[in-house]
Amino acid sequence: EKQNYLEKYRPQYHFSPASNWMNDPNGMVFYIGEYHLFYQYHPNGTTWGPMHWGHAVSKDLVHWEHLPIGLAPDENGMIFSGSAVVDWNDSSGFFDGKSGLVAIFTHADTYPDSNHPRQRQSIAFSKDNGRTWTKYVGNPVLQEESIIDFRDPKVFWHRDTNRWVMVLAAGQTIRIYTSKNLTSWEFASEFGEGHGSHDGVWECPDLFQLPVDGDDNQKKWVLFVSIGDDPSLQEGSRTQYFIGNFDGNSFVNDSSQETILWIDHGRDNYAGVSWSDVPAEDGRRIYIGWMSNWRYANVTPTKEWRSAMTIPRVIALKTTEEGVRLVQNPIRELQGLRVENISIRNEVVVPGVNLLSNVNSNTFEIIAEFEMSSATEFGFKVCKGRKEETIIGYDVKNKNFFVDRTNSGEASFHDSFAGKHDSNLISQKMIKFHIFVDRSSIELFGNDGESVITDLIFPNEENKQMELFVKNGEVKLHSLELYILKSIWR
Ligand code: FRU
Image (cartoon, rainbow, N blue to C red; front, side):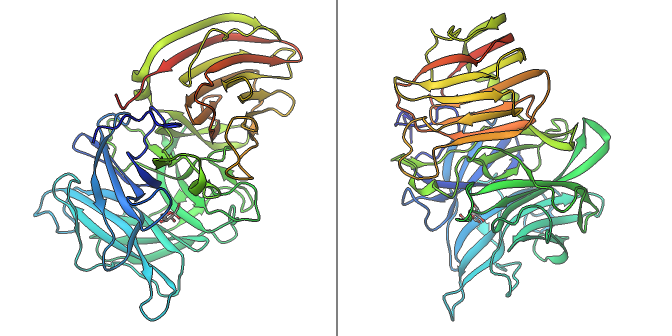
C-alpha cells in the first residue's frame, strides 16, 4: 500500500488516488474523529470508466489514509456522485437506535428495453464508521422517469422543519426533495430556470447556511451548482453559486436572475461540495473541489494516476462593494506542513531585482502584501526554468489578479489548456496574495479569498526557480512569508 508519490507531476500535499482515475469528491462527512472523503473512482484505468466510490479518511483534512473502495457498481448500475450524512437519531431504522452513516448517491445504468441512460437515487448504510457498506434493499429510493440528467444528491438535516432535505441536479435546474427517514422522498420545489448560467448541464449541487460577515444573527443560504462542459464555450466545466434564502421547501435567489457568480476564476476547480456534520464547536463550512476540467481531464499528462483534489477551503460570506459574496481561504491545518521560512519586510520592489533569486522549490506557500505604487503589474513567476514559467500577478489597470499558464510547461495534450485566467475586480490599495504551489497546481487566494484562481500546470520537474517581479515602475512590499511545504505521503 505504501506509495512513493514521486511520479512526475504528483502533488505532494494534495489528495490524489494511489493509482488510476478520480473525479468528483463524494460523501464527505465527519464522524467520530474522522473526515471521510469518497470520490468518483475508476479502479481499472486512468480515464473515466465504470464509477465506484474510492475512500480515504483523515483526522486533520491534510494527511489521508487510503481505504478500500466504499461502493462498487451492482445490478442497479454504476455509482455516480452523492453525499453522506450521520443519521444521529436513527431516523432510517438501520442502526438499532444508535447512530451511523448513510450514503445517498446516484445509480446510473440504462433502461432495460432501450439504451437510454437512466439515473436514480439510492442509499447505503455503514455501521462500522464507513469501513463497510450495505446497500438498502429498497433501492432505488427516488426516480423520475421523464428526467434524463437526474443526479448528485446532497442531503442535510434541516432543523426548523425537522426532516432531511435533498438537493439534486435535474437537467438545468435543481430539484429539492424532503424525507423523514432517508428512504422515502417527497418533491418540494424546483429552482434555476432563468437564473444564473445555463452554459451546460447542472451537476453536483450543495446547499448550506452561513453567517454574513461572521454575524450569526444575519445568515444566508448558499447554493453551489457545477456546470458541465459545453464545447461552444472556452472555459469548460466550472462552478457557480447563488446566495439567498431557504425555508425548508424552496430556495429564493437574492440576486437578479442575470447575475452569475463563479466560485473560482481558474479552470480547475469543479464539482466542489462541503463536509457534512462538522462539529458545531468547530463551526466551519469546509469544501474541496476536483482540481481538473472535463474539457481535458481525460488527457492530462500523468501516467499512474489522474487528478487531485483542491486543498480544503473554508467558505464564508462577506459584504463587498458589489454585495454579499463568497470568500474562501485555506484551512489552518495546512500550516503544519511548513518546514522552512523566508521572510521579507518593507522593501520597494523595482524591475530587474529579484528578491527570491536564491529560493528553489515547487512545493510551497507564499503570503505577501503589497501597496500599490507606480507599477502596472506585479507578482510572482513560479516553477520557472530556462524556458518555462507560470505567472501569478495583479494587473493594476484592469484591477484583477491573474494566473498565466501560457508558457507553464506541457500543454500540447489539449488546445484549450494554455492561457491566462483573470479574476473578478479587486480595487483596494493593498493587494494580498496567498498562493499554494504543489508541482502541478496553482491556487491563488487574492485579498483574503475574495478572488480565487485554481489552475493546473505541467512544468518540467527541474523548474524550481521563482521571481518576484514588477513591471513599468515600482511597488511597495509590506511583508512576504514564503514557506516550503513538506509532503503528506512520507
Ligand atoms: C460531475 C459528474 C456528475 C456525475 C459524475 C460521474 O463531474 O458528471 O454529475 O455524477 O461526474 O462520474
